[in-house]
Image (tube, rainbow, N blue to C red):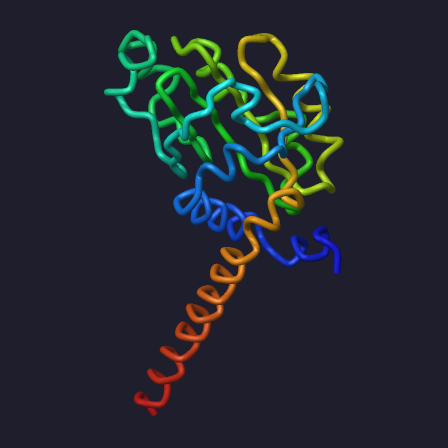
Length: 207
């Protein structure tokens, strides 16, 4: 069975949850793994640590919103921040003292219009305006969306060259995510089983 066939069995939230679990346990593996394809293309796959020249380990967070107190930290005036970026919530954030990276997860069921009208342009604008030295926005996509994602990045995310952009394939991450994906799948099976058991028990008691 190929990596593509394995990943086809999982929904986007399965993959994102598994990645969040893996990053909490071992963020350095994601940071140092040579899985990033830059757009425009560069020298093949690279690690985030290589792209940003930061050997240290950043902090990571999943779906953490940017709040009012973050405005000053990133050099925004309060009113402009509230009007444009209040509650901005990237799928994943990786941050060090001089680095800010957003990762946006997409699955096989992602609508095609995602690539023609990407909502991540707001995240890109945030990074472009943020007062931080090294910054980047990267999609994580299945191989089936690789061409569409690359085209989208070429068309919509090239106005600010100081913001590095590119993508990572889920298939390249699978070896590091396999055990976490299994846990996510098992937990979902348990939840569904318990969910079926509850109305069945209620039905029996009612009868």
